[in-house]
Structures are given as C-alpha cells and as structure tokens.
Length: 190
Image 1 (cartoon, one colour):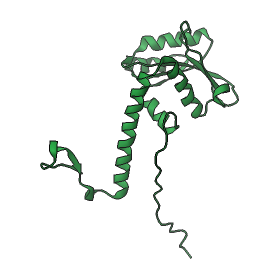
Image 2 (image 1 turned 180 degrees about the horizontal axis):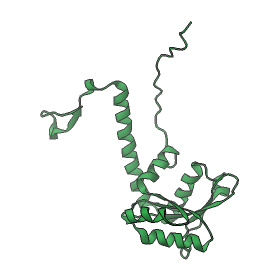
Image 3 (image 1 turned 135 degrees about the vertical axis):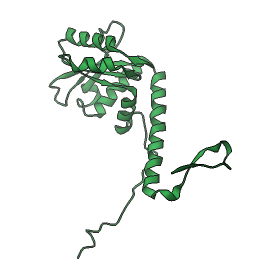
Image 4 (image 1 turned 90 degrees about the vertical axis):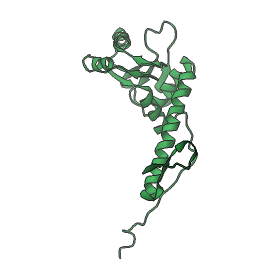
C-alpha cells in the first residue's frame, strides 16, 4: 500500500511495508528494476547504428533458438538497396526454412505501408515467413494487415524486443541472483 508522507520532501509516495509479505516486496522491487532496465535498453538501442541494431536482432533470435550458432543461423544483410530485407535466419537448427527480417530503429509508429513494403519484399524472395522488428510500436492497421495476408509476418515492437533481450540475456548481465528457499515438507514425511 502506498501513502503520501507529508514530512518527506516532495511528498514522494512511500510503500507501507507492513502491508506486504517479504515475497511481495521482492517481487515489486524486481518488477521496478526490470522496467528500468527495459527503458534503458530501449534508449540505448535507439542510439546504436542501424548495422549494430540488425546484428542485435539476429543475436536475440539466435538466443531464442532459431538456427544453430550465430555464424550459421543468421546473417545481417541489410544495406542500401537490400530490397527491404535486413537479415535472414534459419527457422530451426536444421535449416529447414528461412525467416526474413526487417529491423527498424524508429521512435514513432510503424504503419501499414511499411508492413506492405516488407510483405512485397518477401514475395520478391518467394518467402512466406518474416519478422518485422522495431524500437517503436505498430499501428492497429499494421496489426490488422498481417492477419489477412498469405505471408506469415510477426510484428515485434520495442517493448517486446527489450523483454526478449532480458529473457534471453542479450545485452544484459546478471548482477545478483537471489535464491528464496522454503521448507520441503515432503522431505520431512516419515
């Protein structure tokens, strides 16, 4: 429970710790740390070069299990005149199919026209699977468009991308790990 403390400078909200269990307090602190980390990651990604961002995207996908190693699973191919494709990654470790990638560092909203261009680039490669990743977010029209086309395009916005980075240890380090233990009642059964 949060309450205003009139004696605290700026009337900052404080947490009434007696209202929460230690586990709830830890969970809340973890959530706050993760949200702060996510915001910092998104800010850093928006400052990196387009080439670095494309490699970062491949690294995230490899960590998620696409392909095998970074060398044989994915390649960042984006450059001027790339035909709307920034990368290619094997769908699985065996390389049975390829997934094409478009990676855009944008602050704003990615709309339907950009997704249509990517869908056209997929058609030009006779590809049916693609991932469009942005540091921004997607319009409702973009989300609706991918539901009704033949190609399968997954949209990953900046918020989702940073969550994937944190979950898959891309661009982050573990500073501390806490192991919370409880009694194993099964052990004590005679």
